[in-house]
Amino acid sequence: MEGLTIRTANRKDILNLSVLKKQVFINTYALNGIDSEFSNHITKNLSEDMILKSIEDENKLILLAEKDEFLLGCAELFLNSTCQETKNKSPELNVLYVFEHAKNKGVGYKLLTESERVAKRMDYPGMWLTVYHENFNAIKFYLRQSYKDIGTFQFEMEGKFHENRIMYKAFN
Image (cartoon, rainbow, N blue to C red; front, side):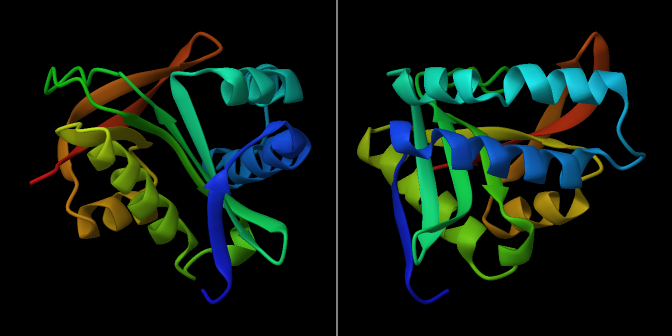
């Protein structure tokens, strides 16, 4: 996508980032509609207060993709994380969200590439992530970017568990 810029999030981005995360989360995971479990999770975890805590957390890095000052996507890295399958200390790509109308335009690829560049610059051996097992488009995307499916992870949302795939990319 022409004119796309990637930058680090700051306090001025809290509102837009909260809205983007909610939009993507709903479109990705509310496959059967919205229930109280889902609403409680979004209300608690994607609030402006939680976004602010993430931005201010020195062990996290949030990258934003923008075009013409419009937010189109975000990536959130948990630095100094450890993958349960590899036992490697490496960043977790906790979030890679792209605004619905900006999908398939290179936004996710640019965010992922920049996230990997940051991790390599910090001398990590690789990067890992989890992805919902029914998010087939995301799984195919990561496989195309040389991530390997290495195991399962149970994501807890309001006391219920949802299967996710663990994917890892070693840097050579």
